[in-house]
Image (cartoon, rainbow, N blue to C red; front, side):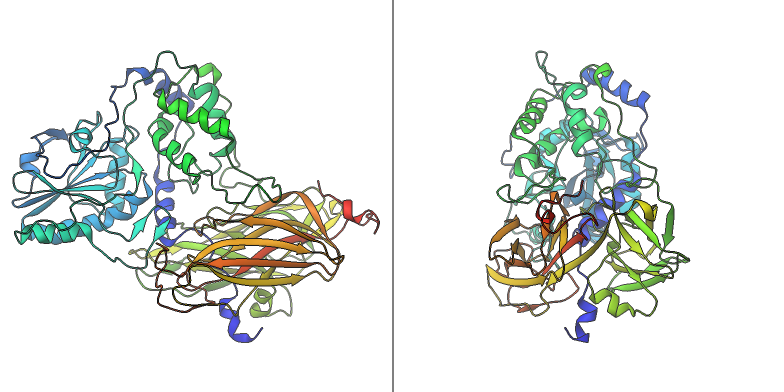
Length: 623
């Protein structure tokens, strides 16, 4: 391993930059909820207007009838007053939909650019879960100046045949639909191309202004299903209070709550009901809850998959109109420490005193900040959590222990982590009796990857540490990696394998595995090759998803005897068939930016308990 690898050492963990931007901005804005408001929402649920969800239908050539609808300030507005002289663009939006968050600023720019050509843009929000206050915050955050109308009963969504957000419709001077679909092809569900290949909306408007028919009049509009009012089935026995709320508490609210990464909270009926169809869709598709390990190999304590019965329960609830149920059946709200997902930390350390300023545009190289906790004696850590100060621009944060005499490069090249942040990766917590040692005099090295989002931003990220007494520590934990810096993926290769290895130099107990690649990553497998010649697949991820960096925590920690080889095999799709591929014509090598690639098999392991004999070592478990 030579010194030129130092700048490449640490991986680009987390969601795509666009997803990080959208999720963080949403989570920071959503209004707080109270038990009283939740009770009122449930009791009033059956008073909501009913509307059957329309089946998708062809819209091209349909004339949109004149309508009047209120804007989010409450003033009634007529289509005739808002329509453009030549063309009208109608965009169906949602204040919490990640793709609508990404395309909001872009639509604002399009509206400004097209206005002098006789083209007006109108926004419509039809979601039952979006209030006027939500729309106001959304418009301000996205710097939208064009009018946004409220469509609480979904009559406008029904007339247009709109199904998702964001979905745009282009009307000619006679209010006839000439284009329906996406804004462009840069962002999709789990997809962010480095640049736009086709500007569908702009192309349609340009052709119409030139008096030409639209070449591609309909495209698929990826995004969130519009949250329509529900007609509750009177005979449904599955309710939110008794069946859905406990499921959300157990599987979802850790992320889908105020201030966390989930793009919308799922802590009340009123919020959940508007997302029921979208939730059912992503659950059926296996996108949520995020979990990608094959069930054929290994058992993991944090397996978040819903059972077939749980999926059917949710589908039935949504199909039956989302019955609220009796408030007396609601489970207690799940409590979390304020500001932290780990138990309240004794040590909270900021990366620096003054905010780091992230420019509006361009590529920001990895930034490194050294903070001194002032430890005069050894500390033992049982939980660590990195909190990004600004999720809109923080792509990932890795934290290393910089011990006296160590250089930053030396510490990073070891692959040993003290903490990390990446969307989808939980805070680190050890099992009883297991802890990470921080020697006296150690400083904290933050490595932060920022991504620009069109606005200048500031960030102060921080680290929280939960400590224990040295007398309670029976095993010391460390992290490491099996890494391949020499990977070279040929242009156009759809299934290119790359391997990496790590050999244990002493008996260790394996605790968790975290595969990491970038957007060309396709699959990842860990295999243990034991000194006696036997082999075992520890983890198989057949469909790797860069948007989620998951720690796979072994349900039963596994002994890695001295001499065991931890072998990792990854495959990459560098073909044009990979929608996330930045450039299928390029040979791809190891690099820290998302358009480069990485091949890292992270893991953590602990020393054997002091009382574990050589004969019993193979049966040791850390509880």
